[in-house]
Figure 1 (spheres, rainbow, N blue to C red):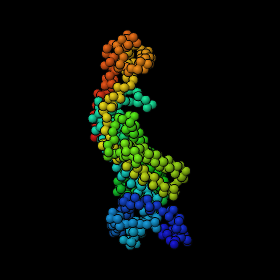
Figure 2 (tube, rainbow, N blue to C red):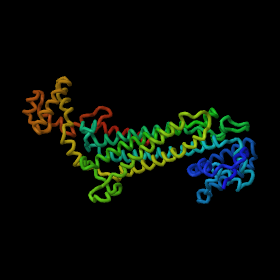
Figure 3 (cartoon, one colour):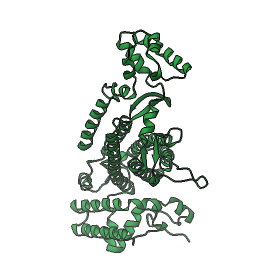
Figure 4 (tube, rainbow, N blue to C red):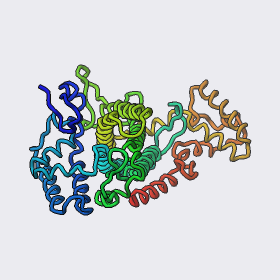
Length: 462
């Protein structure tokens, strides 16, 4: 059975049922209903203020819209595929509630500026929620770092042991990444916070509307300057997906490290029962499902960013139906980012336990203190490049003898260079190696404590 749509009498025939289903967005844009109602209330108030409709009519519209809000929250408003989209569903129900005055709501407004307004209202809320989640994640990192300033962990480059570092220093690197994510979303918020309402289909309207009033009612900083840009701009959505992708890049990098640390080969951490699962056939295993899922979901958000860029790259001004495709990717990216931030915050808070004894052993069983031997000689006047080459020979000699640098006798050290004295042993002890790196931003304990203090101040300032 076909249905004659009410959006135009231009057409003589009805829309084919399959095309109606293909065209409809109600299945996903119903998520915008709260924002659509809020935007419509502001629009109705503006119509009344400017005299385009009477104040009594505006009041009836606002009361009807509020009733729809309550029906939705009570689970009573459930529009079907015949509604096409959330905007028509609301308008149709409003007319049922208040009569013909409901048909006046769409005066001086197009679906184009309406959906743009709804999407921006939605994204403003989501950005604020995600920023708070980032703060929660950072708070956990700060707490962990506080406890592990003098816990040592091997530092890596090329996934090869490089130099020992403070575990707190390692964790604070992720705090700084998260801080950039928080800042970046704040910057993007400013470009989401522009109101397209009143731009019409593309060219504005002949009615004496007050776009600044509508923007102010909805808490926007200002209206769009250009009506064409207002209805066709999706830069803000692309920027949000870029920021979301970077958030997940950072969470995925941490996930990869947690997965490695939990492996038997590393054994730097133990996974707690609350954040790990077992194997269906291997009873001895604990699987790092949380970081693996975060790592996997990262690609999903990357795909949404790529899809949005491809969606936009060839669109002429102004609105095109292609833009209906922006919502599912945006909604899913929001859901994915929020779930990953929540899961990683829980994982870092209660899902892992650092094996401090194993970490202490790890930093003492390699040649990651070799650079400090070169620094030791340089401090005694040996040119650094000469010292560097000499230490390469020291490592080679030690490997041949099956010894670590700490196991060489003083005689063996002096045979390599007369500048070596008994203080070489203290200089290459893991804690001293870390403590000595006291340059600004370095892993020295003094610097890490200072970095923590500064980070806490920034964190509180917001």
